[in-house]
Length: 480
Image (cartoon, rainbow, N blue to C red; front, side, top):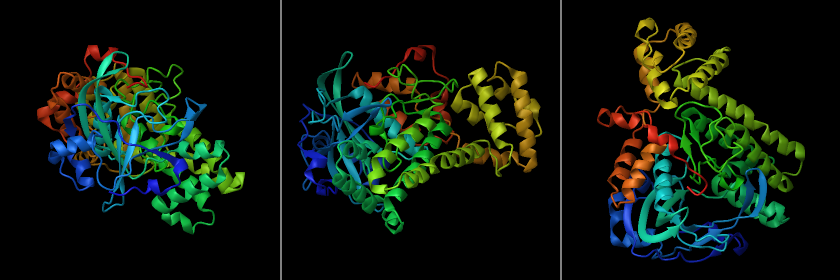
């Protein structure tokens, strides 16, 4: 284990040891995440790894630290923040470059802002499962290696039990990491951080005429692509503050997230977000806003406002191009046509009016037969307004006929991009409630299913079902 971030000046972090977790025990581990860093997931249940990944012991050469950063929260400048309950252990060399390991819930840090620095089992399970589910969906994301639990009581809305989740990413540097030094008027530290990110993660940008402008442009494109991926699977992050935005364009800091069920573009998955700033429909423009905040922070290095603006202008085109490409794939379209946007817009309007289940609709759409509208029964039954669906389906069929689409080939291609299984809130809740009774089998089972989201898995058909009535009462907030 190494720790490249620890080579930065001391102002960037505080070195500290994790707070020991009383009587820790193994909850779950991800095989694919473990393999990324050369580990065997089964081995992580052994006592030495339980102690290590709960923060009770520290690996040789590890330099535990918590990073400082700032950020805009719900569009308002919040000042200094930092790793309030996360401790970076260091990074492990992999074939694809270093991978940082971070313990979330490992105790109070100087940035905890009166908090206890702990995570609870409920939120740890949600982050663990969603991180790995997103990776299996092909969406840029941090990873989750393992969860360790404890019977230590933690006070949230009620008393819950503690847990530590081990997160992994090449870097956890955020937009807010740059904002911190900009608003403190520390240009030297700002440059040190930018050079660290460029040299470590974007070395090809060194050849650019203005590497800092190139960095902003690269981050804009990566962020736009990431959010297009979110929109394409109906994922809502819930708290897109600038301190939760990765400089590498990864989905990080899973809290009050949700996957769209009955389609509503204005859906808000975060109960704390009373104004709907982070609704599904707003995510693309909030991503752009956040890039502007990053551009403001990088301006002292970029030099000219016009150059920063030119970099920021890459966002909207990158988002539109990626979103259109993803939607064409979801609809099994092989070519791009001028009227595709109208087809997509009318589809979403139809879904909105009928509150069709997002995941199930796109999965079922693959069953449509170009020459057999009479076989549309399953699809039609998803809509209250069946004539409206028939009208859209006729336009879709006409589009498919233009490129001589073959039903079997299109269906196979669509099933590779339209998941059958996503982490619905009620599925996570069932796993959480069993885990709170010290039964972790459902966490493991759900992880296994979500690691193959595009496979039929007929033995697990009920995991693709519409949410039960009781699920309508589930709420997640920033404490989640």
